[in-house]
Amino acid sequence: MKMNFHTIKVLIEKELLDSIRNRWFFTFLVTFIILAFSIIYMGIIKSTGLGFESFNKTTGSLLNLILFLVPMITLLLGSTSISGEKEHGTLNLILSKPISAVEYILGKYFGIATALMLTIVVGFGLMGMVVAFKVSIADARSYIIFVLLSLLLVLSFLSISMFISVLVKKRITAIIVSTIIWFFFILVYDLIVMACANFFQGTSMALFLLISILLNPADSVRTLAIVNLGGETIFGPSLIELTRMITNVSSELLLIAAIFAWIIIPLYFTVFFFKRSVMK
Image 1 (cartoon, rainbow, N blue to C red):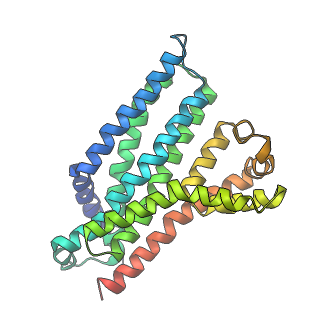
Image 2 (image 1 turned 90 degrees about the vertical axis):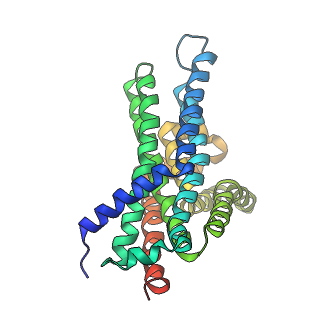
Image 3 (image 1 turned 90 degrees about the horizontal axis):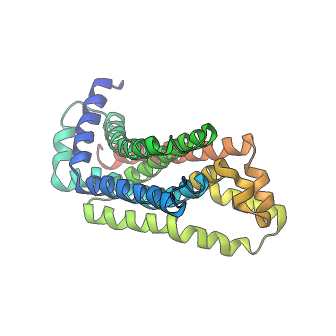
């Protein structure tokens, strides 16, 4: 069955409107804008009115904000999308129409992704208008790259959340599983990696850390952002081998490829399990 792009377009529009009406989406939008502007404002205060403090420090603060908020709200919105329709019985009504699993999943995915990316673009766009008057062209370029990495973070965690939504049947279960996944990737994973890194030294430790970064989409985005801001300065001499490994074009492409793998692979399995468990 060929994909009907009109059907996908209709599903994207429906999911976009549903996402905007969702209280989690509104909470994320307001919280994100308030916190982001607070970081910018504090940058001005700390600089005693003479201009922004270090652009890298300000963007680093924004990076921490993004790495906490974006995966959380993305997992919550995505994981409750399909499970919510299962619980409310609307999924059967939708599937009574001539629609394929690929069309349904892609429509929901890109609808939610559009809503979340609009939030990122609006928030960063407003901040960008402030930042643009205070930084150099090189810093502005780094800021744009940082925004693009934030969008990739949305897409990767949305794929994971859609996979969760297919596997569970109730919204509350989806929320619990999403919280556990967020807690693991954002808070626990790095602690485990640092503990295991003690068993390695030199180049072997750098290789282990690089592999561990590839296995976590949040760490891949964080590392690319840090490298973009000046990896040799931020990583420090204790991780000089890792710095050398990831501050070249091939390693950056490897990290980008890993992020796209986190986007494509979970989405593929979402379609696969949706066909087997729902459309059988």
